[in-house]
Length: 477
Image (cartoon, rainbow, N blue to C red; front, side, top):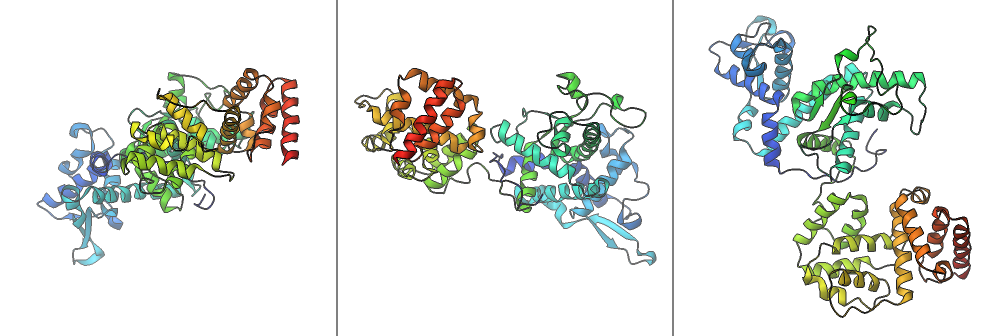
């Protein structure tokens, strides 16, 4: 997908660049590439590149040593050295110079960018690391036929990290099973009973992703638990497991099919790739300098923790009283998005301190904000809070339900929400004659809200009363 057909990514929280740069320098692939450049600079003999600018045919022991654990030979030295050489040349840590002889031979020397790893800014270090990440990903495209499977999986991991970890892929972030990623990439949406062909596609995608993440793990972008080799059949396919069992195995068993998560460094890298593709990918704190209206419009798309972080950043730049006044002013309105803004305003003001009290008292008589203000003041146990009129209570109820409907993907999705269903049932069961009063509420969304209530209330008579009330509300208008 391109940026034009991918939805905006949820906001994420990133560590400071200094911390990310330290992670980049510690990543195995970059540290190996730096080791190669350091070795080339200290070698007493000219380091001649191999054919096509590749690594020398036989690296001496002092060059190969960094590629095994503690300098030991783990049998993967040459492949690791080749990948490190490719990254070092691709990012300018190593520079290939013609040696002036016949045959086009070239000599490898430390590149100008090598010094940036120790003397450059965090942003410069991250730029080198990111170019290395792109080099690794670009090298995999021919293997995947350009189908973008790994790109799709990285996009999914990014969105899951933002949603499930409060916008931050921390060290304790959840590991995602490879079968889940594979199914999300190749299985048709909404398929409850996959065909044999789909199961085979999921299995093949799972193996391809496992290979891809094995290659990516040395960049430090992901933590990857590989697929257990014992699961491969004689034909090379994965036997049994989540792709064949609708419920899938649990715990340690599912981990045998491979697990992966983004690191904070990986979150940074995928975000840069999304931005390069034209996909909006906000960072928590981006709205700190924006208006209250911008903040309230954006908060419904944030997870709970990300929203809290965004609000805290926004408040940090303003005097508490003025900030509260700005939020309340932005929450007013009769447009379709106004209920959602008021709900976001409540969310933001929940983090306001006692300094905001005068702003809330100033709107006690406001038809749209008076109920919100009473809730805020009462929750803090403050004195002299006037009791709301019945009209205000019903108006606030309709406004809150309208905000929840607007926040859902669509009215049908909201209608299936357990939270909304419980709320509706509690309102109707706790207020005798609720619908006889609700249809009279002077709110632009009254008819829509009552219609939604008719869809979600489990009692048939209550649902019928809600439909009748919705009709009366619309007829009155």
